Every structure is written in C-alpha cells, then in structure tokens.
Length: 220
Image (tube, rainbow, N blue to C red; front, side, top):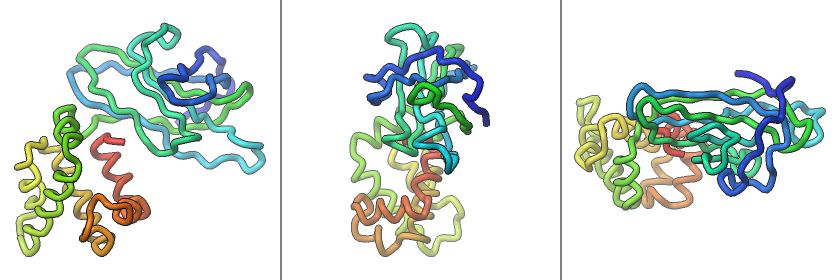
C-alpha cells in the first residue's frame, strides 16, 4: 500500500506496450523485484475507491513492468491501462537473479493518489499456459468432466488429480480445481451446458470465481 502523492514524474509510459493513449504524465513510483530462481510471478494493482471530490481519476491507473531501468528504451515487457481495462495482472516468466521493475503511474499531470500493489508467485507456469492456450475448450471440457467424475468421491483431491492427467502442473491443477469447485457451487446452471460460453463467464465473474482463479494462478 502506498501513494504517488509527493512523488516525481520520472518516467513516461511506453504507449505501445501499455496499450494506452496517455503517456503517464502523473507522478510515479517504482518497485524492483529480483527472483532467486526461475519462476512465474504475477503483479497487479487492487481497486482503490476514488475520492468523490476528484474530477475524474486521482488514483494511479497506468502500470507496467520492465526488464531494465524504466528510462531505457525497449525494456517494457507488459503493461496495463487500468482505466480502460480494470482487473488484470501482469504475468512474467521470471529468470533467476534477474531484476524486474514495476512502475505505478498516473495519467495526467498533477494526478496522484493511493494504490495497493501486489506481487506473488503464479500458480501456473509457462508450460501450463502453452498447454491451456493450445486448446481452451478442451481444458474447460476436461475440468468439467473431472468434476462430474468426482461426484460422490470421498477423496478431497479427486478433481486436482484428475486435472493433472491433462499434463498441467500440480499447482496449476489446484487453481483450476478451485475454479471448478466455485463454478459447481455458484454457477452450475449457467456453466453445465457450455463452460466457455458467455453466460458461464459472466456468472463466474459475478461470483468472484474468476478473480480468485487469477489470484491463485496468476493468469489474467
């Protein structure tokens, strides 16, 4: 938890990386993170309620990560414009002993305020993303199939063990199993016919199933 109040405007957001029309003219704060081993990590800004007297936005909404000093060109890895796209996180396949920088920035000159910054190990690795991105529909169908096959089972990790058979890592399988459990308890009717359909996705979002999955897996 921190604030960009009192900070300087030291860096400009690379628009092509962050996906914003703004250059981050507000004040900014920088964090560095060095990994001790090869690992997947994810970082994000939590929502902070705006001051009702603020004319438009007084909390920093531009967030990006670099592999080198933020003022060096072509070092931006990923970025988020939270004003246009609230909610996602930055996912990095971090390398051992490499330092990454996370920049929290405001849109316009004079724009500054509080923020809540998080960085954590991601449950899903690059190999998990490669597998799931290859065929999201099959992964979703597999997860639902596992849930159905585990009905009546007394084994607490039945879903997880079944999902692992797809080739996903144990931790990522755990995150998906938790998502399936949330879907079964809160969105059974919406998701039973089509687990990748718009109705199911909307229900998962409304019941925080998707958000909890993101926090566990690191997948935005």
